[in-house]
Structure formats: C-alpha cells, structure tokens
Amino acid sequence: MKNATVKEAAISKQSYFTEEHQMFRDALRKFLEKEAIPYFEQWEEEGLVPRSFWKKVGENGFLCSWIGEEYGGIGADFLFTVILNEELCRIGFGLGGLDLHSGIVVPYINNFGTEEQKRRYLPGCMSGDIITAIAMTEPGAGSDLASIRTTAIKDGDSYLLNGQKTFISNGIQSDLVVVVAKTNPKAVPAHKGISLFLVESDMPGFSRGRKLKKIGLHSQDTAELVFENVKVPAANLLGEEGNGFYHLMKELQQERILSVVGAQVAAEEMLRMTIEYVKEREAFGLPIGKFQNTQFKLAEMATHVQIGRTFLDDLIVKHMSGEELQKEVSMAKWWISDNARKMAPECMQLHGGYGYMEEYKIARWYRDIAVVPIYAGSNEIMKTIIAKKLGL
Image (tube, rainbow, N blue to C red):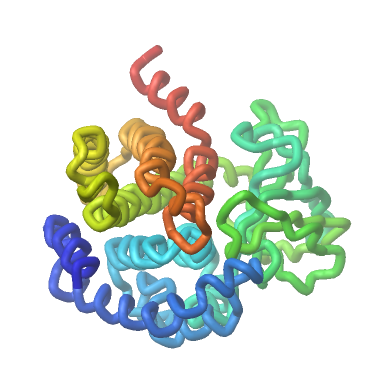
C-alpha cells in the first residue's frame, strides 16, 4: 500500500491526465502486475522479452493505441504513449523495446508511409504480430548521422541495400526495420542523400550479427544487423527519397521526450525506493533516515526530481499542441538524464552493502540508467544543439 500511495500521489500532480487516461493506466498496471512483474527477472536472465508477451500487450490494446480507427486503432492521444512508457519503465528499462516500437518506430510508418504501407503494417504493429526496430547507428557513425556508409542504390524498380548497423534495439526479434541509408552517397551536403526504407526480416541478404551483451538493459535485445545486396522494392521507400534526414529530425522531438520520460521515471523510482529503505534500515539504534547526511542527500534529490517532473510535464503539453521544442527538449534530455545518472550511485550508497546485491532493484537501476545520457542523441550533442539555438 505504501508503494501505491507514493505512486498515486505523483500521478495526481500531473493534471493533464483525464479520467480516461487514468483508466488506461489502471488497466495497464493490473495487466503488468500479472503478465510482466512475475517474469521480469527471468527475462533479464534470458536476455529477451518473449514474443508471447508482445502479443499479450497487443491483444489487450496497449500497443500503438494512437493508431487511427481506419487501421483498427482507437486514435488515442500522446498521453497514452506516455503512460505506456512510464509504467513499463517503472518495472525496468529492459522493457524499453516496447516503448521504442510503440512510441518511436511505428510513428514513422504512420507519418511518412503510403496508404498501402499503413494498411500493410500498422495492424500487425498494433497487435504485436510485427515487432519493429530502427537502424540508424553504424560501427563508425553514431551522433554524426550524415557520415553513415550504408547505401541503397536504385536498380530498376528496387534498391540494392548494403551496409552494417549496430546497437539496434529489438534487433534480434524485429520483423520490420526502418533502415537509414544513403541513396545518393555523393550528395552535398551529405545529409541530403539520406533516405528511409522498410526492410522485412525475410528479405534475402538481410541477416543478424551478434546479439550484443550490455552492462544493463539485459532483457532488451540489442543486435548488429547486416545488409548484403538486399533487394528492397521501391514500394518500401518510406517517405521521400533524399528527405530521410528531415524525416528523422521531425520525429526526434518525440523520441527525446520519451527518453526523458524514462529518465524521469527512473529518478522517481530510485528516490521512492531509497526513502522507503532509509526509513526501515537501522544503524546505531536509529533509522538511517534520521541521520542529517541522509536527510540532506534525499532533500537535494527530491528537489531535483520535482524540478525535472515540472519541466517534463510542461514539454509534454507543448509537444501535444504542436510546438517546435528543439532547444527545450535538448535541455530536458541532458539535464534530466544526467540527474538520474548522478542519483543512481547516491541511492546505491544509501542502501549500503545491500545496494550492491542483485536482489535489490537499485542495483539494476544503477546499471540501466548509464545508457540514457547516450541514446536518443548523446548529452554532448544536446548541449551543442542548445548552444546553436542560443545563437552561439
């Protein structure tokens, strides 16, 4: 009951959630308590969230709830995506592959796809029959997207796709991958030669490399992808040829907001569990929460967490109204993720030796949070964007 009270208090402060949103959250939470929480540790050990779980999430209407009624969805607003992200992250970042699919990858198909592409793929994405991934990063190209070397050269009514991608979330199980490639390797500037393609897993020449071992996010499968003369039909071009970079930039605002949601939830969860622990753990005849050092550290963290939540809530409202928020989202991405990363060792320290034990969730948060300042654009890139927006 104590945990539920803390969570409900946090949720009630987010005034933009309606009764309908809360009903969705309640139903999702009950579903996850039954279908995810009892098995999550097993999935962490196995390094994979099973497809059967994806199917259950889809069958219960939690995946891609924003998809329009004409494709079988309910046309829900962005807050339903936020709720899915929050509730999955509270269990563990290893479930992030579902967030990626539902809130980041599938919107590319909805926003830039042809009518035929939407009708072909969106229903399966919503049901969990189709698992998606997006392949941007390469062994030699991360934040500098214009330097990618994967090519897709026009060959009649198809494109020949060649290249390698790495650090691809959902890479092992994905049925459909949005691949970033250069259709014009000689374009000046280079980013004007980038296009997006929908590549199906059974296309000849498409193979998966290593399933990558990571410090954290153990149950989220991450892989290398290899494309060797993959014949991609021209009908699988996503959006306009040569405009892939601009399509990516348009969607990055939502991707980064959702990465901030995860970081904020991590900070809130680490704070919650640490407060509970220091109230119960005794040393020298007192709960360690009575010691001034503990109180000061938690007071500071609680303040930072509240500032982060206020900033994030404001961004979500503005994003839903259609505002361009590149500077503000970059600020939130670096500050909130950096705050969560700084909190992790402080919270672990307050758990003492138990914090280093796998049975305590703070150990997993300590591992998982390390990647958040890196993905969705590194925090160093975020500061570069902010500086440019300041006219520097």
